[in-house]
Image (cartoon, rainbow, N blue to C red; front, side, top):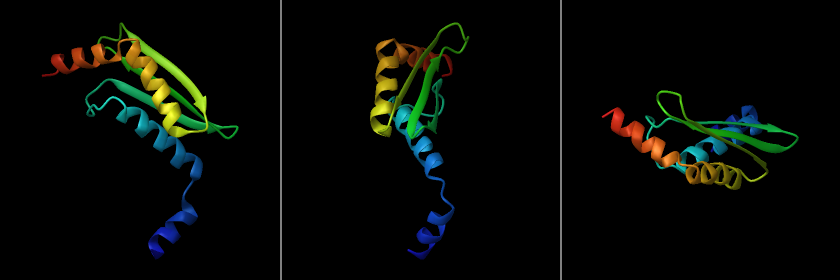
Length: 100
């Protein structure tokens, strides 16, 4: 427990929340590291800003969505849901077939 207390002193809460949001976003797709998914989160004005995208390997198609909010789960889910509805899983599956 003492190590947790020491690490808490040097932890940056904004970075922790941004990284948590990015990881939650990626987890929404249930994919491995090879999927063409990107997410960038940061905090500004006490809100989480997430920019998520899914890109074809040839770069011809790129799906993007941005969201702002205070709940990392809700922000991550909104961005993922919009991308999935726009065809992200088709791009991910196509890429998986190409790299096999």
